[in-house]
Image (cartoon, rainbow, N blue to C red):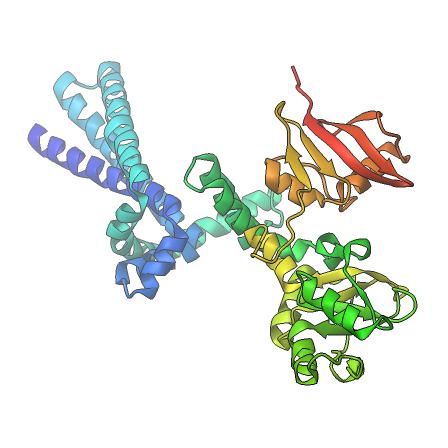
Length: 420
């Protein structure tokens, strides 16, 4: 009799361990990896994904099974100890103590610890058996869920559930693995940079109009050709009269094709026949949308205007790609050192440098919601145009004004403020 009780209790504890480990493994399994395995034809992964698609059902089935076998095991243990010690408090105390320790160690801690250490493989192993349990207990689960919903409404705890978006989940995974050392800093910036595109506007990444290299269409043709060929850029805006009056975009290849047949006589070069029509885009355009337009139209260059149609800057396909992969330089680029790290850990920054570039170069977290450039951030926070020598502390960083030209802050030294 006692041996029969022991065998039954051991079987029930094994079932309890199975349910406990299955719950941990299925809730901790990587959905991304299961999805990939299913695409590769793994039927066990498909079973896991079916369970994960209805979490309430499989968790309800597991809890139902786990509680059922634990209670049954406790009842059998109480009966066994009653046979051993007779009816009374001693048998109940012994059964309670022994079952509490046994269930805790062998049916909870041990299987959960094993499952959490290898959730994917464990989930693949138990998915089909758990699926059978879910289907078999579906009517009980539905009844329990109905009762739970009624109780939550009566208690005033029922409310809409805000699901975590896929983007938030991806960002969290990237940051977590970066913090744990599984993702390098450069890789993290590239991955997050791709997600940030939808949060940026063209104004955030454009080259300001003061930094655009333009050519006057009325200058001497030879001089114009020489300046165009000396430029590191292949596309140059041409203006006539005021710099705001852009008449077209000159492409270096188009210029060479037109100039070579003329030999040395460039006086007859007709710019109007080779200029490309300028493409103007609003500064409020999302960077992601602009990237899509560049790709769909097969163009790499656009001029940025404000709501009044006035030129604000320009944006290229390369500018957008740099938001993802970082600065791109080739042998013709003029590399402007806008961020210079100092020996004391501070950095000297030119005022026109975008805040995002400073954050990328230093790993800092300067806010870029209210301003695009470092100079813009200083003026926004100081509520004045500061003088050289002035110092400000904003957002945990010290800004020492180094240079100012007219009303423009052209040089700033930035350092972290040590907090006790």
